[in-house]
Image (cartoon, rainbow, N blue to C red; front, side):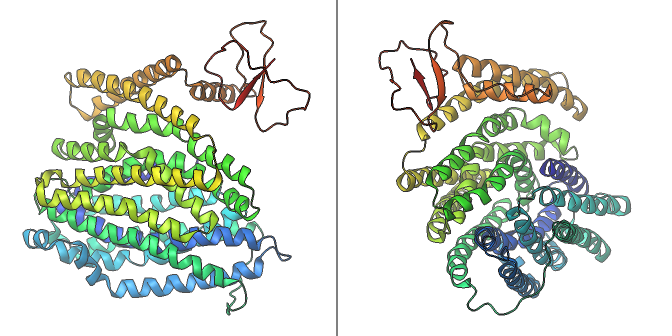
Length: 573
């Protein structure tokens, strides 16, 4: 629910931002300046903090003092590192902005580079507060509290929305970088950073209320930080690769656009990426975030059975929502973009849709790479995570550079989205193969069948919904009519998807619907047991992990029963 609130407010923030700059070069300048601290935060926080804090805190909490001394020392070290990195990056802002702005784009648009550098100075302090949010949030997660961590970004969006409203009231539409005043830069950059500061600082009270007391502890020798340092090296290298990838991709996007208004640019990519990550954040990230501490505990306890079970949950549960969601965002993408970002022109909306479609083709594999990252963080295996991070990075960069050299500029950012999809597919297949080698069979065949059936049902529903919306679009192209297109098209998609799922006998979809209806009616969810078509057939079903009595006879001559029975259930006379 916290993620839902954050994402809904995030869409409102994106719509207000588009009202001010649409998909102009000024929007590119702000997005590049604002993305820099986000990418650096990913290097420091997502890699070092998320990848190391939770496993180490999980181990430390088994000590007599519940790990309080170790956690205080770890937090002290993390905060000091983030403060130093923030200071260095703020000083180096001109150098960093120059690295990601193509010379061709800079020469074509007066004021582009200057605006990016000034906004960068105001945005760069976000690194520290992003890091504070990650550190305190992971301590909350390790202690079993997720609500505040999920709700904090919503508060950040509220502050940033207030800043955007103030900007619109004072100055309105401002697409030209050369026309931006100091007051404009201070209000937009300052309110953006203030929102991130609120996001980090608001976690202090939930931790205090939970009984945690932070006391700075210096001196880290002899406290078990050797293992942390070893893991940090590979983890830092992995996210540094991702950071460099972001720099090169941002540079390529500005080079391919070259200041042409009708071409997709960095702002187009950001609009598409915001929509793309909405279902991913709501479903996959929420589930994987909750599974991660349990995975760290399972690895610490050397419980392979529990680790397999958690992996199956992470690979199966989100797919029933993510795969249909990615298909919906392709089939109904245009009316969705017209509704959520109404200030875009028709050309800009079409550009965003093409990039959104390219990203959504690989949404589920993108989710698998997220699970991959948490799996190796839980194992404290930095090396494997490092080289598996290089694989999609290299694939995306090769495709982006190919587009830069051989394709027209209008297809540049679209190729970046395709590169992300292809790279995620390659990395996911390698990861799943490695997991089977490490843990043994964990039910991947059944999971793959569920994926294939869900993909087929979603593709059929999305194609028919898209065709249906195209017919409706002939009546009107107004943004108000987009509401009707989305409502009718979405309902049409759901009906077709459920019918296709029933025809393909996707039992997981049926069980999910039953459980959802049961929750709505406030009734207990029905048991996941499939009855035979023969009402008097003497069969019972029970999970494989339940013990089988020695005197139980497994029958090998049973007639075929309904194929909807999940393969993890035995049929017994």
